[in-house]
Image 1 (cartoon, rainbow, N blue to C red):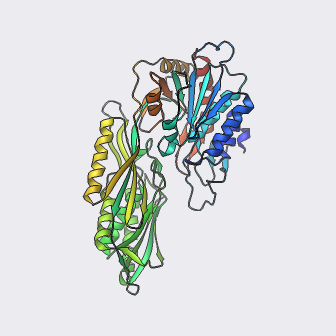
Image 2: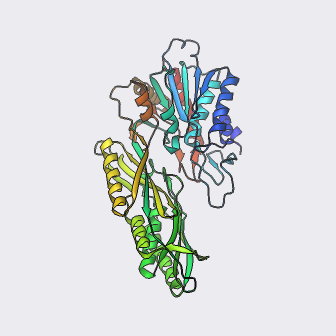
Length: 483
């Protein structure tokens, strides 16, 4: 089945166009150019800035000419992750989008429904000659997934709207009115190297894979294993059975995605090779018992590899295994005010081995400024105790709840008419650009919504077709009611 056969046709038409353009974070030139060409074809005023943000302006339709403008906002970039055997070059090639009429997914890669569906919705609205709406200021930002860089760089001096609809939520029926702030943290832990004696030693690659992974904000509470942390546990188990030397370790790909794969190259004495394999097999059996419900496809493999010239010395090996095992990760605190909301968490998203240090990259999130600062101090204390250093970047604020909101009242009222039930109005433990935009546009009234997406930031990502249809109809009705 083809996307062109799905409804709403105009939305899936633009989603297909967007999916054909490589648009990973940091690679948004072509998608920004596409949006500018779209605006030109539609006869709409538009601008593109140095950060590849695109802003498109449309006048209100008949009867809405004097209405207050509304800002429709989404981001152009996507998280690029692929399955191990996928050969698609996501820097240069478009996605292979598939559908069975119920779901939409991409073969072997992330789909980019986060946030391609927002861009498709917005372009479909702007291209329509039948949708009633107030003046629209469409704000399409770049590099949201790597620190909301586009929103940070956005010039808002020509924006007049005080109402903003962000289309970057991933659960239909939920209206988001607050989100977490965050900070990206880079930790370096040094190690010492020593030469490997070739005759009495052998080397193995230990690979942890098959994990679900997922979005480090909205799915952090689902008890999904972090492959980097699990690798630390595997190495600790092997180190108790063998004289282990760590050559390198790596895992994850994005700080905002829960790692689903990690691996290490290790050296052991030849006469202990069987003990290494036995230890890994025993650990895997234990994990299958422990994680049979949450991680049913977990795999841990060992494979002999060429012996490296150097490994970390014993002290460095023990220190780094300890770090991977014990460094904080995952959900830290639930909100005392909002039932079911994760308040503070951190995700160990990337592990890399450099020439003389191991680097760990985190995304720390909290719906409170104090929670973010406290967990940051905890990570700094841990890393500095091990002789390492910590640097921070891309610190962004939380979007705080607005007590009085006309936009929220309108969207709730329209939701009840369209769906014949009340929406869930809540906060989310994920970063949205609303926090940054609230700091740029004084007294702005904002809300976030979107259709149902599953397993975002992973190659298992999918988008619910019926939800896209219903959410589109809802957006159209909301625009009609924004006088």
